[in-house]
Image 1 (cartoon, rainbow, N blue to C red):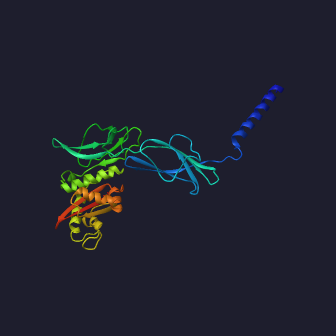
Image 2: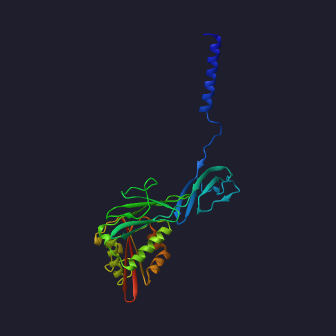
Length: 317
């Protein structure tokens, strides 16, 4: 082997060792920076970003104008509220001013969930779906979750009992809405609720949509149970029944299946609007009315001795 070739081989070995050392040996004093944890909450037209620090004793500074945050930026004191698409940049500094963690996230409000309802045209049943202005609705009829690859809603969808229509709204610059579903039994297709029940149902879903919750389905079986509870309230106005059992135990008595259940009661309100307003003004009743754990509702109304009694029964199947 010639001297020149030996020199070339030696040089290549030196270069290989140097590169290996460069790749495998980390620089002195290197340290990984943590990413800040966060949670998103959607309510109405707003999105709320809650940032969780690595250490509660540290301070978080943030910007929403695209600039890099510093110790002179806004101090985080609560959830960041946004009504439009915005990029949040945040840093966490410890007591010595050392940067401990950071976060960059773009948040967008969620589109209000579509509204679904059954309509009759020339004796045939259809599901009508509506959404906020500027939003497009995509839907499925096989129980699957709708995406932008699903059918685009252009008009009422032909409906037969038992079919599950699922819909989601999309709008530019916003997070896609929650999925809403519509399905009724053959009995429900023939169910004709009273004006009071219809009004409470309508107003309840309006409140839920305004606060980011999906629509409830009006369940005829639950309505019958709620009607019974409304009559019982004229004897004993309480979440206990006249026989001493809990109000929700009417589910067991009537064989109504559920995974979760709840009850709202009210009296002396002369209209559905007043009853719903009273529930929304009470923290515990409001929580039940807006609860995302529920997907079905039964409504009862009873008038006796000059007093109106109102009941909402909730469940998830």
